[in-house]
Amino acid sequence: MNIWQKIALAIIIIGAINWGTIGFFQFDLVNALLGGISPLPPRIVYALVGLSGLYCITLLFVPNREYEREGRIQHNP
Image (cartoon, rainbow, N blue to C red; front, side, top):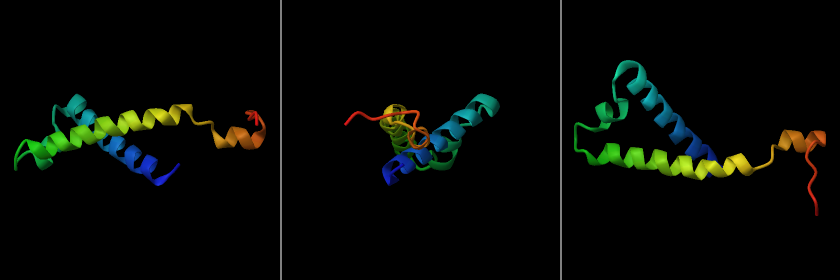
């Protein structure tokens, strides 16, 4: 995993925790932390979560290196 993928994954985890707090407690954590100033900061966080999710879709199509080491996946040159 490269640094951009790790950053995107961390942002997705923040979004997942926020959705969990909304689902379980009806409490929007991002809006509570950033929404008091103006509506713009939470919208930026939500946009970053969405973009990170789209970026991480590419991880679904990357072969697992563990399988490559075991010989389960073979690359054609």
